[in-house]
Every structure is written in structure tokens, then in C-alpha cells.
Amino acid sequence: MRRAYLPGFLLLMAFDTLSQLSFKLAGAHALPVAANLAWVARLLDGPWIYGALVGYLGAFFTWMSLLRHAPLGPAFAASHLEVVSVMLLSVWLFHEPLTIPRVVGACAIVAGIVCLGLAEARVTEVDVLDERPLPRTG
Figure (tube, helix red, strand yellow):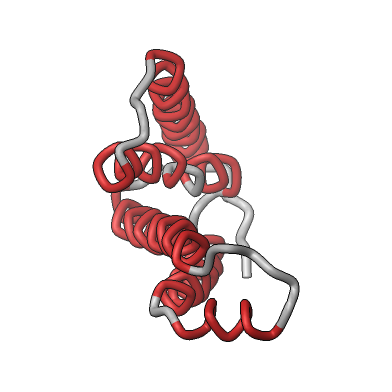
């Protein structure tokens, strides 16, 4: 994967992480959950639900922009880096345990993304060397 995509993926990860952490905080501040308007009002009264909405909107527009330029396979994999960032920030912010299975899983996610990125770079290099035209999108 080209280095030019890196800022876009970092921005996508930041927006996704913001939305997940904001939902966690919004839910915690709106307890107890009840199926009534008072609960909805309590949820909308806190700032965290708006952080979640900003995160989702930012992630949507960033993702749409990335899809115009980045190859889909590595892009889709890299779009899930927020799993790792949310896990690490949850350890720090919410004092959730960092267990061996979680660390192994996070390493597997990162390794998979690296492998897909390296494979895409290799395919692109071969296409350029063979002078085959690459499919154009959008």
C-alpha cells in the first residue's frame, strides 16, 4: 500500500476510535437504560453522543475518499485498525484488562494488515514492471 494512504487511514482510525469511545461514555452516562423519552433526553443531554456522531460522519467521509484511491482489500483490512486503538485506549481510560489473548489478537490484526499491504505493493510493482494498465476506479 502506498505511503500516501497513511494519513487517510490514520484519520479514519481516529474517527472510528472517537465514535467507539464516545458511545461507551454516552452509554455509561445515560444509565439506567429505559425505553422512554426521558432516557433519550438524558442521552442527548450529554456531549458524548455528539462525539459519536462526529466520529461516524468523519469516518464515513474519510472512508469514501479512501475508497476512491486505495485498493479495496488492504483498505478494508486497514480500516479495522480501530479495534487495536480502542482496545489500547480502553485499557488506559476505562481500566479494562490487557490480557494475553487480546495482545495476540491485536498483533494478528496488525500482521494481517501488513501482509495485505506488502502483497498489494508487490502486485502494483509487478503491474508497473510488466507495463500492464491498472484498472481505473471512479
